[in-house]
Image 1 (cartoon, rainbow, N blue to C red):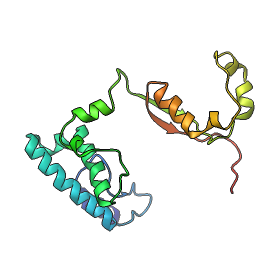
Image 2: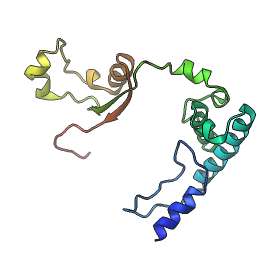
Image 3: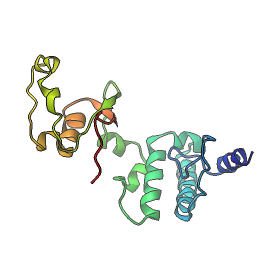
Image 4: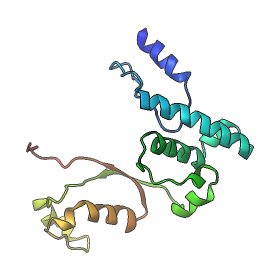
Length: 175
C-alpha cells in the first residue's frame, strides 16, 4: 500500500522524459528523492514551462521534443555545476541545433547484443569458422578490443544509434 502511495506522490511531480528519482516496480523500496534530484525536477518544470509558453507549445508537446530532453540535460548540468551532458542552451529553445549535432538516418538501429571486453581479446572466438568466413581479420591486441575502437566501430563505422552492452560469458575475476 505504501509503495502505491509513493508512486502516486511521485506522479504528482514534473513529468519529464528523464527520470528524476528511482521509482519502485513493487519489488524494492525506492529511496527518497535526494535534494539535488528535487532541484533538478523543479528546474526542469520551470524551464520547460517558460520555453513551452514562449514557443506556443503545450508543455507535453515541448517535453516530447528534442528541446524537452535538452532541457532535462541542461537542468542537470546547472544543478550539478558541471558539463555532464553535451548540451547547449540554444538546444532547449530550437530543434535545429540538435538536428545538426545528431543528424537522423533513415533507420534507428539498436544493437541489443553488443559485447565490450575492455581491451581483453576474445580468445578462441576469433578463430571460429563462421568468423573466418566473414571477410575480415580480427586483431589480437588490446587496442583492437579497447573502448575507443568499440565506440568507433559501433557508432562511427556503422549506422547504429544505440547499443545495449551484454557481458561476455566467462569466469569473473575480481581485482
